[in-house]
Image 1: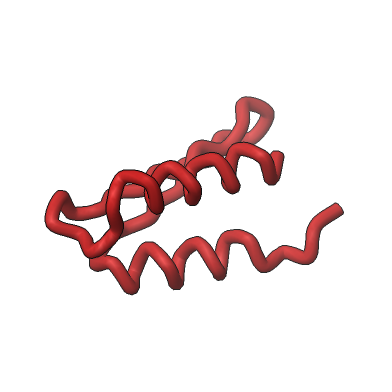
Image 2: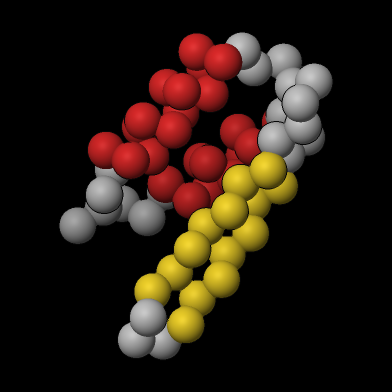
Length: 59
């Protein structure tokens, strides 16, 4: 069981880069988190990959 901080930390990072995070949830079906980052973000491709891998490994 986690600490419950993952979403708050993710949201802060995404917002620092002028991005958006949204959630769609259906009882009994699951939850989808969508992240949108602007193309001209200060993040490079390597940093985006690291963030994506960390989120995948947190499952």
